[in-house]
Image (cartoon, rainbow, N blue to C red; front, side):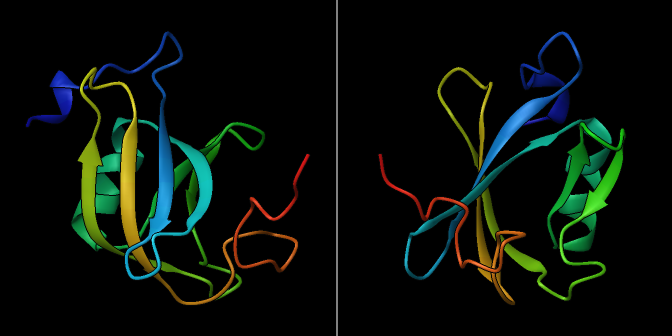
Length: 104
């Protein structure tokens, strides 16, 4: 698939679910734009778009908690990505392994 075939929203963003390739735990959800998606594919590590900072965000660049890309998938509507990764530390800024550590 060509990146241009993906369905980005009106802000040019697409959600990306990040999953541990070994345990299949869902680690986090973040947003990508075309540039962050290209950089992820080129570098082999996840790069996202930070909506709060309005800039590219290489996951783990400052913390060391990078995510090595194993496989990148897209859903049947081509509007959501699934990144299978090998994490080098916790995914969550709280220090938890996954951002989904709370229950309702």
